[in-house]
Image 1 (tube, one colour):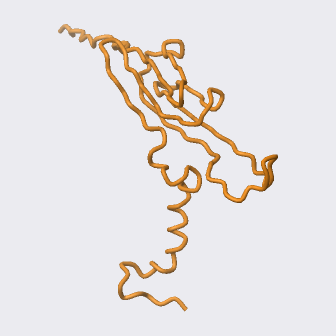
Image 2: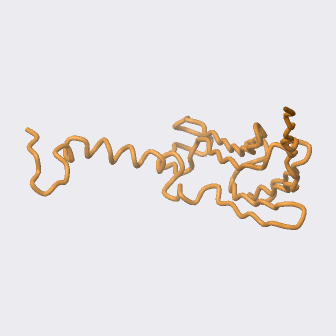
Image 3: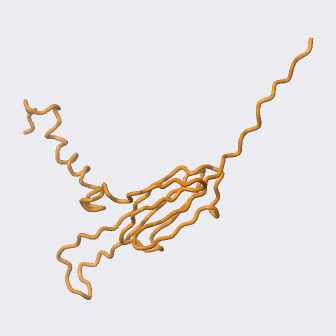
Length: 148
């Protein structure tokens, strides 16, 4: 029987404890214990462009997709693993590599098009070259004087 704990902060600490712990571990199961370090990004500013370097170790060019929509550049990396319990190398007794999808978005402005952005994936680092373009300015508000 569940009884409220006098040491817990919440009446339902013990009731939801296991479920809550499992939910927090979900990302760890998908990305491994170093999930917080995935898709680490460095951004360097130059006079006319930005250089963005994103760590994507173990991903191939086919696994990475770039999409530009409404001024947001979205980087998506997907990796799938076979679920077979046996392989030509033998029976799998421990598997630490994961399968899943990671995604990260950056606002780059609505003045850019897909042709403006350069991308290169080498040695597990996705390098992006994003030019600086000024947004189109709205026409200045003009006031018309009323006679009379």
